[in-house]
Image 1 (cartoon, rainbow, N blue to C red):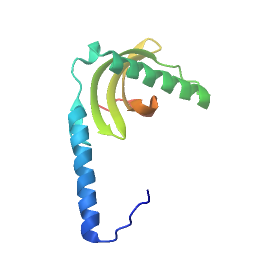
Image 2 (cartoon, helix red, strand yellow):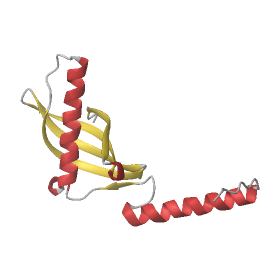
Image 3 (cartoon, helix red, strand yellow):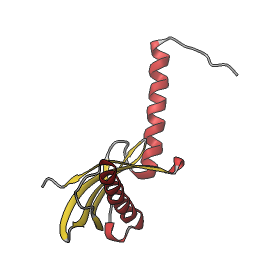
Length: 130
């Protein structure tokens, strides 16, 4: 079946509104408003969040090796805070406790998970600025 091309501004607006409404309803039923952050409760007992924290530290350590940095790698301790945001997947904002040379340190991490692709990607990993 072929597609019908309509160049009417009124039809374009109607199609856009229907699409946006569908996206909002679908995401809201999942975890809240599209684009809005939501705090994740019971972070320390949440296996998925803890695994994402470990993934973040492992990815950071791999990047250090690729850059041939002399800096000592990190050892994951636990995720101590987390938020999620519905995007093209789920974006997690993690506050991670790790050690480096035996000294405790805190890091902020951003990971995007696309479960339908079985994909996760570390977007940002940096020492906590506060």
